[in-house]
Image (cartoon, rainbow, N blue to C red; front, side, top):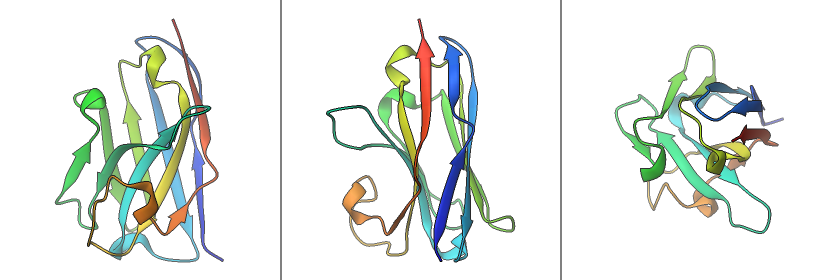
Length: 125
């Protein structure tokens, strides 16, 4: 059974940091592009960051560049998102996602094959 399980969300003050983790089971991530998306009520799921299978290509949402860092450990079958200098507008449910194909736009949620259940991140002002 394929699963992506996120952890590390919580409540933090503006300017603080959180580290999200995503553990995969039922498949090995070493051939998959991995990504983080986020979603707030009433809005579409928004791309945050992605990382290619060997970490050679990394992309970020413009508003998180310089504050967030995506990384992966293929040996441990995990992906992480280090979030620093958090802002209230970063408040959302954060989702881990995986896609096998390298064709198409990796910032589009519809191009991903597997999703986690999400973890809530709340940044207070």
